[in-house]
Length: 260
Ligand code: BEZ
Image 1: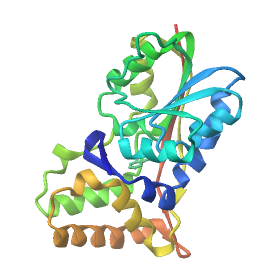
Image 2: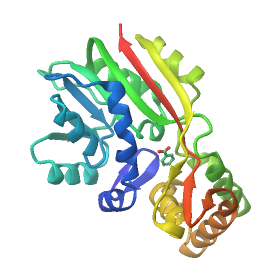
Image 3: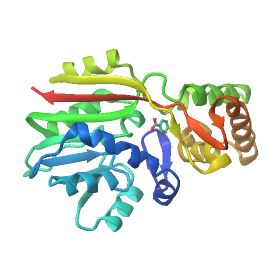
């Protein structure tokens, strides 16, 4: 286990066993990246390395970066032929003799980083002129029903959830200007609904909350936590549980921007 942005704790085994959909659904983003033979590409927030491996299988050299040492350790075990590094996306810089990259790719990671301009600055430093940044993450309105259920329960329990809110879900109108401000030309940007089946039958929402809502529930005694989770699951069932399966109300922002 290790900590990442926003005090979220990541468990690589849980990530692979229970929320493998994160990587599976990220494959569409590789079509937008279009990795070419011989290109050098960073996968920022690579988790346990599945998409870095996929990018590498298309002929590029992909280096995976993640803030969680646990994820990087698991990625190295799964894909010993690839290169993985622990790095904080808000601060990382290339090593002294490291050549700038052709592309930075990121799937389902940037919404955990609350300093988007610091991330964009890191990405810019890592790219050659003309290099591209292709990313998808939670956009404005992402998991709105889940957030409402959680924050309502937390408020009822007297927890100051605003102080521990861990996510950044921007609109296209908020994010594209940040890219432009930091020297990128935005050639593609989209916000779209992507309802996401959670798997695990009736445990799906409980598992999702366990995997992802850590920062909002951290420090609460187990009984209080269980009470909040149980009430969230009950409240959300009428909207997000159908025919024995949970679906989360994901909305994604997807961008492709080129370094000027
Ligand atoms: C997401 O992938 O959109 C997401 C995952 C965990 C928490 C919030 C959002």
